[in-house]
Image (cartoon, rainbow, N blue to C red):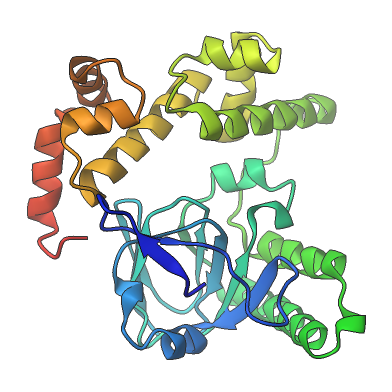
Amino acid sequence: MENGHVDGHSAVRQLRYLPAVGSAYGVEVLDFAALRAMDIHRRRVQPQRPDFHVFALVGSGTGAHEADFHGYRLSEGSAVWIRPGMVHCWSDIDACDGPLILFRPGFLPGFTSAEATTPACWQLDQQRLSLALLAAEHLGREHSAAARTPRLASPALLAHLLAALILRALPDTPAPTGPAESGSRHTDVFRAYRAAVEEHFTDWHHVADYAQALGYDVRTLTRATRAATGTGAKAFLDQRILLEAKRLLAHTDLPVSGCARRLGFRDVGNFTTFFRRQATMPPAAWRAAYSTADPGGR
């Protein structure tokens, strides 16, 4: 987790998943104390962008965290889930204690729909927190045993224990309506669409492009995306482009025209029109407002 670099045009530290010795299973179990101990230069308070998941529970203490332009106060019962590509920083975790789990993107297949509607931070009640901490402890013990005694290692078991932990900690979601078969198909379609958006959003700005590539019609993508996220396929795509635009404007020194090119817009005018429609102000004004509101440079 400590390995990373800063892009020449970016103030964001890019973190690559490089597991510690004995943790080559796609998951690593730490805690806030270990994070503080390995980060003596406090790089955690600067913007970073991991290519892996970070899931944490605050068992005690208070603190603060920032993720993609949202600030969160941390307290006992806080759950934090940083997904790959998020720009975040641990702005204040000096008093936090609890488990912190890192895992590769492919280590937990099947959570795409759930994570799409899960915020970066939410709160657990005392009963759920107690059960989640027990699940994290079980995962931690199995992880330690695998590191000490490789013949006991079972990546499948670790994946199941991590899945159990996250399922216990996930916030409540409305029960699905309609036939189970339809819900399952919508989930599969949305997973395919979301993966395609993540791969191509800097080149493809129209839902029809994804429909053609995936072999579905636009209405099917829209129904599946609305079932998974509560919003349509076009709005989902636009929000993904907007988020990356804000990341570039906030965390790099690229001019607005450079941001437009990076995001696949033919000219800066089209990009400005898009950004103004989504964010209610032009990109240069948004950058200035963000810089003024965050004089620390994050």
